[in-house]
Length: 192
Image (cartoon, rainbow, N blue to C red):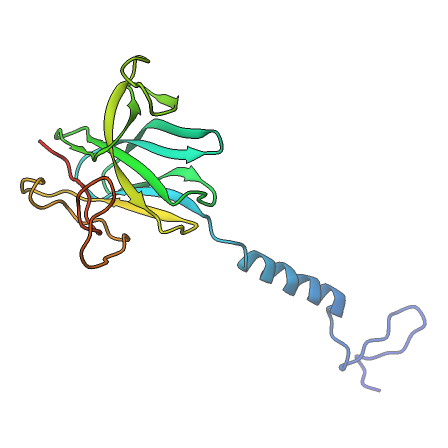
């Protein structure tokens, strides 16, 4: 027996064939590492501001109780913000944006309620009679995806003739996005 391997009734017997870490512990470590690496990705509705301005964002969506509009999120230039956390439960969401630094807006033909300060408003009917503003939101068709990111862009041209593109929307030939009159892949841009 080699000098390093001295048999003793008081010391555990070591063998070159036996691993130093017990198999149960090694299995637990492997399971923990795999569990952490296979955690599900976050499923959210996000908005990225790819403009040179700060923007204010309002969001419209349908929850279990009906239509809801919420605002305002301030999204700094070249930043993204999670507007709704968790797996998306609807196909259509509605966004309205204001360019805080240069003026203008991202709007559409889906009219919902909003106000000038922070808000959560239930329902989209009778906005003015209820003391709210009636605001045109643009529609985002998520195609029933679990997660979605809207990319706001800017354009130096008159946006009534050439709206900025919205990467991520389907680019089906022909047709328009319901409620906007725009071809898929476009967003009504900030109007000055």
